[in-house]
Length: 217
Image 1 (cartoon, rainbow, N blue to C red):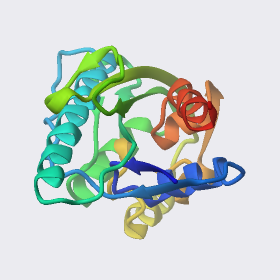
Image 2: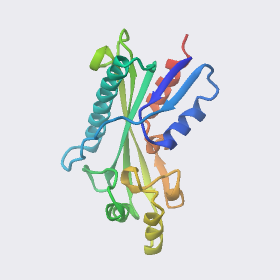
Image 3: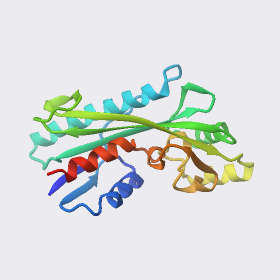
């Protein structure tokens, strides 16, 4: 049985991956979040770069956690998937809209996105155990390959009542840009360019690479 750890707290990401790979036999895809404080997003640095850098930091954290798990005799995964997503301000690629900390921030972000098109960046890395030759070398001999891709989403103009409804629903919690395209905001936003899985939080090329990794002999 090949064990694939999704190092994420996102139930939607896990559900999407499990459904995507349900036809593959002898694969156990499970999720446990990282014990990791994500870097604070910063104004003035391209959002694309910040997304990539944060994903690489998560990869290093995941490799370090594996070393700790090995030291106490825990069963280790065969592959680890980490990912990060940041929404780009509609008018400035150097202004990130990360995960809001409270309802006030969520309201501000949704007002900023209302009636606009914006780009969503997702980076995903696949970690491989020692002995494999990945692009990025990590703690304990693990390596990772990383992909960063984007999609464009268009928001309807949000009425005051609809804005209150979205914020009150709590659907913004843990979501970059304060919305969930596959959830509460589905009626207000649509994909214009790219793939929906990118907005969900996974780089499509990484999903393809993961599929190839678990189905190759």
